[in-house]
Length: 324
Image 1 (tube, rainbow, N blue to C red):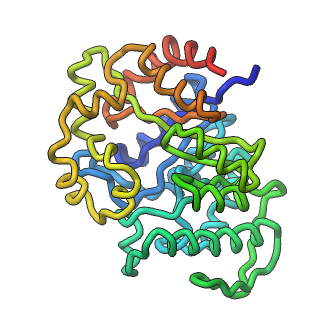
Image 2: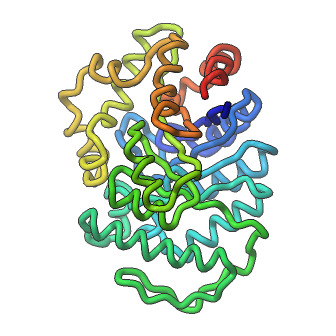
């Protein structure tokens, strides 16, 4: 019987770089299997209050840890970063981590990509851009000198001079049929934030059969449930908008406006709040039942991590290890 791998999210929107590195070390010591690192330029909401450069954080994490796997969840390789530069960054982290890195990619959110000063394209164009980027990154990881003329992205005479013997696996975030098709063709790993079994089926049909699939789910641990609920509402009320909305809004104030009518009880219905181990296990189990092989937890609240790790190590992780 296979066992699901349980990850911890170093969420840059809610903590500064020093804390993220320390949290990664705590996660490794607590027994988490992998780290998922968000790659943002802005937080979702002003209340979260942070957004450091994740690639510097990952370089530090690679040196501060010894065995835990790590990945971006996710990087957009089309606007804020050119794919040739993303390939260079990923290859470097793979070397620094001694082969523990997975490059998670996606079509991006306006929240982070608008800073490049380019028009925010519709979803079908973003997917075409992602396909161009994957062509470039795959060729660079194969050691080629790459000149590429895509429909949307080009590169000229690009080459990686520090290339690991085993390139990073590539993950692609999916939310529907088009992204599943791209993931099936180009990805080593499927990634999603919704535990929908049909995403896995579409990924399989496009060529992803037998490959890992990684989910992500939030929780708000606190011994006082009312504190946990308040924190989840304050910092994660944006989450319920769905990715068709979340990909389009350009700034934290827009997420605040879009979620102003979301109630605390609405958030608590979607996110486990408090110290109920069973509720947290059930949230992860939804992904396991949907065919996911890995699930990354997001503990909501930068100032709540210190109390989370002892509970996770002694109570939550032992129960999650029974899933499969």
